[in-house]
Amino acid sequence: MLKGNMIHPEIMETLSLCGHGCKVLIADGNYPLKARTNGARRVYLGLTPGLPTVTDVLKALLSVQSFESAEVMLTEDGSDPEIFADFKELLPDIELKKIDKQAFYDACCEPMVELAISTGEQRTYANILLTVGCS
Image (cartoon, rainbow, N blue to C red; front, side):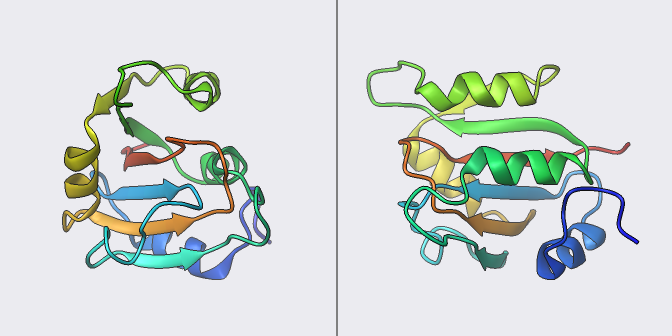
């Protein structure tokens, strides 16, 4: 019996194959997942506009996996989108590394990205690239 809050078989299988340093992308509904993730396993969860949210998926992932770092997309004007407050609340011990849009897209195409999850999230800049920790 699974103990965490994650029951999606493809996500669980891929997470079980991830080691320290592997990366997981949780993307909003506007993210070009196919074009901006190379070898990652892609999982499309978007059910309706807004569901599930990126934070819904992040909460479920945190119930089964630890992460040591997080990268987010820097807005054009440098301001923090509303979802960054949610990320900081869910990841209190992890600093959000803000990188520009093209650098974020490039990072999501790196070979260490093992899993890319598309959600129904509607908030802007609601993409987060997580690095798997060792504990």
